[in-house]
Length: 284
Image 1: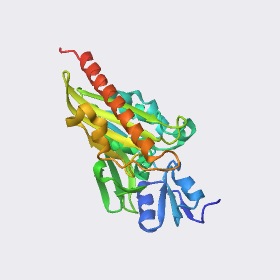
Image 2: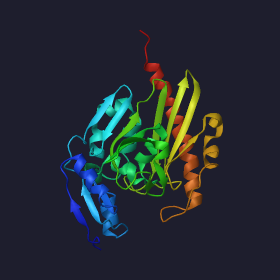
Image 3: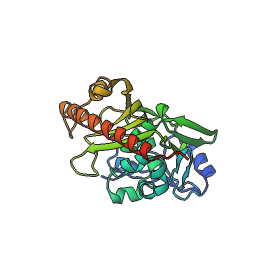
C-alpha cells in the first residue's frame, strides 16, 4: 500500500519549520521516520503535509554534564548507544537502547522521535518516565518543558500540540547511590517486547531506600510503579497496578507471568548494581 498524498517541506531553520507547522494543522514532523513512515504506508496516518526537520542545524547533539544527558531531536539511537559519556552518566540508556529494534533501524531512528511517538511497546518512553526526565518542545509561541509524567496522554498519543516540535530530551544522571537494570522478552531480539522491565533503585549501605519499576508492553501507556514498600513481593505489588492485555504477541496471562518473573529478576539486579557502584566509591 502507498501513502495518501501529502505536501512536503524541508526547512533549513527551526523558525521555518515551526511556521510551516503553525500554518498547517494537519502536518506531521518527519525526523527518523521509523515509526511514522510505516503508518503512512499502511494509511493509518494521513497528514496533509510532512515537515522534514533533518536539515535543521544543532539538533543532533548529545550533551552530558553533571545533571544528566541531553539528546537532540536528530540524534539517532545508534549515536546515543555509542556514547560512552551518556552510558557513564545514565547506564540505563545503553541497557535499553541495545534492545531497540535492529541496527538498521537504530541507525536512522531518533530517540526523541520515539519518545513523542509515545508507543508503550517501545523502550525509550518507559525509560524517560522511570528516570523522571523531560522533553523540551518549541512552537511559534515559544519553548516549554514537558515532564515525562505529563508527556504520555494515551496509546500513541503525547501531549504535544500539533504545531510543536520536540527539540531535546533530558535524562537525569544516575545518583551515586543508584543502580539500574533492564531486561525484556521478545520472540526475536530487536522485535517488540512481549514484556520489558527496568528498575531504578537507591541504596543507603545495604538498605534499599527507593525502588521503582518501569514496564514495556504491559499497559497502553509507559507505566512506572513504586515498589519501595514492597521489596519482598514487588512483582505482586506491581501487577496490582498494571493491566496486562492480550494481543497477537502474548495472552494476558502469559504477559502477567512475564511481569512476575522479570520484575523480581530485574529488581534484584538493580539492587546488586547499586551496591556494587557504592563499593567502588572511595572517600578522599
